[in-house]
Each structure stands twice: as structure tokens, then as C-alpha cells.
Length: 566
Image (cartoon, rainbow, N blue to C red; front, side, top):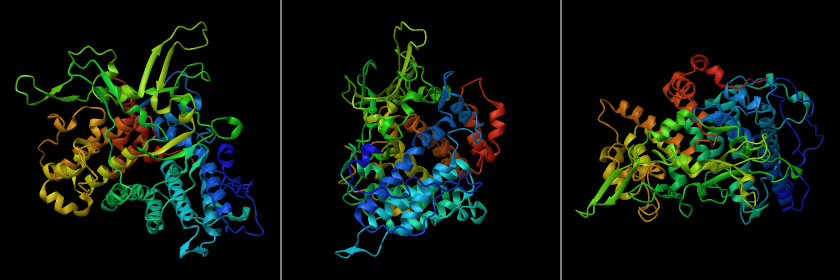
């Protein structure tokens, strides 16, 4: 991480190059043994230790996106995708696949364990522990990494102490934890640090260092969600949104038709996919040049670039096309005769320049195709740009891989509230936005009373001007859409399942191509205790008439959701 390390004048943490298990089936021959433990008792030590862990996170940055996206239903690979990506998408990756390397996760965990065991937490200044902020950061890195490990591998060897000799790295010495057990452990481990502030390192390597850190409350919300502790999850997300002095309204960035004739599009959506955006909560900083270390190759997967001869490898799937184009776009105008508000809907009678302008516009904002003349038959004349991984003049979009956006947290809050028994609230996150008037108008008194503080949003902070329903980010005025509603259903349980389907769709519309999809489908299937929910979605990704029966049958067995741990 040369362009980051140059910001610090200190020795690099000695465990930066140290690994843990070699895929957790044998002792790691590269494991370093230390006769004298290195005590972390100076600011230089702790700063470089944290940055050293970020260096290890770079190894799994692209992988986090690709494993989460290619195994889902929203992305399809082109004929130019390399065989390793194809194996991931087809659930046939073996131990030789470079994206299947549990060692990289354990290298992060080993570094975190060493830091937590050796940082001097007894040092204080003005009554405050000097390294408490870094301690909380590292605990959160460790929890998140273990969560990713379990999502990708199922049950995994679990340890929380540093392994300082090869003899200690025998996987049979450790219990095997699944995702629920890991979530339960780290909920208790992280809970004391929800109010610990982040370290203030300023700008590091041209990126805001605040973005290097994982928001503790959001990670705790995710852990509770995976553990099935829904009300607790909702509280962590809610408290993150509403923390005094650091509030997070959902924002009003949209891509929308700019006229009632549906012939002009205004796009304020694509610009949010940047490490500098307020919507970006956390990212892994990457190198811009290979000379400096690990660079992201996501641009080469999702875009036409010189490096791939303009043959992009991944694009939106037919299932995603159908979902996006199947949304009803609504637009509120003033009726020229009555001078009253009137809702008009985009219809099939409109001439669209491209099919991806039909329905929800977030796909249109995210993906662009163009044809260019080419004098070489080794280069593609069809060029794709995925705005979520586009390059710019200063390569800013290449230098960070996003882990959390604000909308992820709101959608997970909706998921948690719905499963906690509050479907009206969950649907309001999608359709209206949670500010005072909407909460009182669209959520019943009974549900508001039962939810209590989980629906406490300051009327002075969360307002009409900064809070909309997430569906409105691409489908127009969702709050006025008479077709986008919870229909009358026989039971509350039916309403919860209906709203969960809408949340699942909204997760797709908002987060496609960002690596969230497969974990979301896994978790929703776990909520339902129904592997067929995930299996049917993934087997349908090629669209109507292209259902993959073999893949469906394979994914009915949950063991086939995971990479082989060898």
C-alpha cells in the first residue's frame, strides 16, 4: 500500500505479511514464530497495525464483490469471462480457483487477533484509553471478516487468539462455527464499542480515512440479522441513522424522467458511487498502480477497457432486466385543467430509445452500451460502461471498493423491521420514507406503539427534503403510485412475506452489481427455512424459458451454496 504508507513515518507492523491457516486444512508453513511478542504501545505502532490490516483486506476486496454478485441472479457472464469467474457463477469452483482462498481471510483474522492481544490498553491520556478507537476498529474488521468467511464457506474453524507458532495452527484444535454462531459471538464482542469514535487520520493517500472503517452499529445490525435477532438488528440500524450529531437521512438522489412526455432523463444517481459520496459508508482503499500493490480489477470485469480489449466479462442478467422493466414508473404533475396534483404512469406506448429505460431507471443509470468503429478484429466494437465501476481521469473509482452504502443499511433495517412484525414500517422505507408526517399517516397506531423507539426519527432532522422511499430512487414518485401497495391479505404473516418479496426486489434494484445479492438471498432463505427461495432465483437468472433445472436441484442442498474449504 505504498501510496497509503507514505502518509505515515513509522515501521510497518511485523505481522503484515503473516498468514493463518492454509485454507484451514493444514498448518501454514509460512506462519512466523515470535520469541518475544511485540507490544503495540506507540501511536506509530497502532496506526501502522491498522493500515497493515487494511492492506490484508485489499486481498479480498474484489472477491467480496464477485462472490456476492456472480452467484446471484442479477448478473450474467459473457463468453469472454475467464474460466475462474465462470466456475464461481456455476458453483463449480475448486481449490485451484484464485477466488477460493480461505487463507486470505485468516490472514486478516490473524493480524486482528495479534493486534487485540498486544495493544497496550492500559495507556491513558486525560482519563481516556489512548488506543481505544483503534481497538474498536480492529474488532469490527475481525467480526466482518469472520462473517464473510462463514457466508462463503459455511462452518469454519474459529479462533480469537493469535497463533504464534506452526504447532498452534492445527484446525482440529478449534471449534467449527457457522454463520449464526459467528454472529452471536461477535454481537457480544462488539456491543461495548457502539459509541467509540473512529480514529481521525485525515486524508490518507488521497482518500478520507473515515471511509476505511466499518460502522460498528451497521455491522452489529448485520450480525443480528444473520442471527435472526430482528428487533435488535432494527435497533442498531435505527440508532446508526439517528445518532445525535451524526445522523444519516436516506438522501434524495434519484434518476428520473424530467418531463411529463417521458423524453428527458435527469440522473443524480450514478454520481453516488464514489468513495467521497455521503452515501458511501465504508470502503477498502486500493492501489492505483500494480507497482504499489493490490489494484482492483472490477473495472475490467464490468467495463470495456483497453486491458480487456473492450470485451467486458459481466453484465446485467435477463432476470434483472425483467425485474427492472417490470416496475411501474409514476410521475406526479399538476393537471393543467384542474390545477390539482395528478399521477401519470410511463406506459408501453412511449417510444424508448433503449429497453433499459423502461420501468425503473436505476439499471439505465448503471449500465450503458455503445457501438464504436474499430480497425482491429481483436477489439470489441460493443463497449459497456458500468457506472458503479467506471474509471475517471484521476482513477478515483479504481482506488476503493465499496463495502457499505447507506441504502444497504436502510434496506436491512426494513428487512429486520418486517421480520420483527412491522410490515407497514418496512414497506414505508420503500414507498414513503420515514419522516414524521409519513410515519403518522401510513403506519398504524398499533404498529407505532409496538415499535416504540424503533420509529423515533427527529422531525427536525428527517424531513421531506432529505428523506424519500428507496423505490423512488428509480421508479419516480413511489409514494403516489397506486399500484405499489400492500394488498389486503388474510394474515399478518402473509403481509410479512409479501413485504419481504418487495424488499428482496428493492435490494436487487438498488444494489445490483455491488456484491450484495447472494448473501441477501442466502439470508432471506434462512429466514424462511426454505432453500428453494434462493435456488429458484438463481436458476431463473437467464430469464423466461431458460430455467436451469440442474442448477436449481444443486442449490436445494445448502452445502452447495459454499465454496469448498480445502
